[in-house]
Image (tube, rainbow, N blue to C red):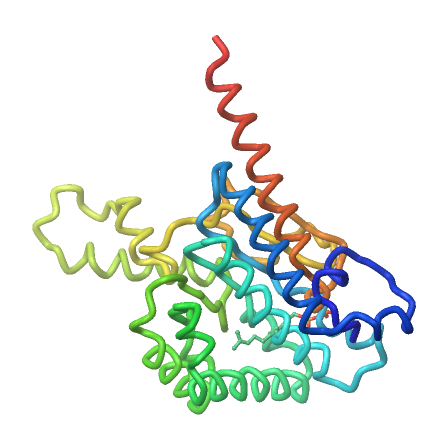
Length: 285
Ligand SMILES: CC(C)=CCC/C(C)=C/CC/C(C)=C/COP(=O)(O)OP(=O)(O)O
């Protein structure tokens, strides 16, 4: 892969010989400096707190580059780590990712196994070496119908939540075995059970909105400000249907392993532009 992140993320194409002249360390330093400068400039505007990602197009990326099965997802995970660095530097407080939908269990058994193995491997690696999570202050939470996962994956998820529970700068919410409709049903069921247990309730069997929201998997977390779905698809695919009422949707034309800093910057600029537009509308008589 082209080794210079800043030039790569700006879609810069360079002659191979010229590339060899630029030491990687120097390129990374230039990238770091320009990135921080750019993020500082952005921070003068209204900054979103929560960004959500639908990690779409890993398989297609693998096919595009003739990779072996699973390697597209492997690259997708690596890119997630890079994006987390940027999101941390941009001072987001929450990042949500759609890692595995309940509908994904309908894929071929081999593929489901491969993906589960990859996800478990990554969880184990993050437990083994918490340096990155600790450095960025990332607390990792898993959200979804976790009982659908194999015991070993569930255990790995629990260990990772435990290993990062003290971090307090950025919360990474990993939606796994999740669909929004399942989340809503779960919230309604729990709220009904609570109402049934409170016999003295004058409202009879009325469920209150606050209780329903509290009982959803994402209860207690703020709604995302921006939802990014890679690969140009503009469907929500049963992800955060309840939480995306006022959210900005952005669908860059790249596969998940290709998403880069410029897409993040663009998403934030779109958010800021919409913010100012809404402010202007509010002030109009
Ligand atoms: C621990 C942790 C956070 C792990 C996350 C690992 C990771 C990158 C998971 C993505 C899984 C997935 C089904 C993505 C969709 O791509 P796709 O297979 O649907 O690709 P396609 O759209 O090209 O078919």
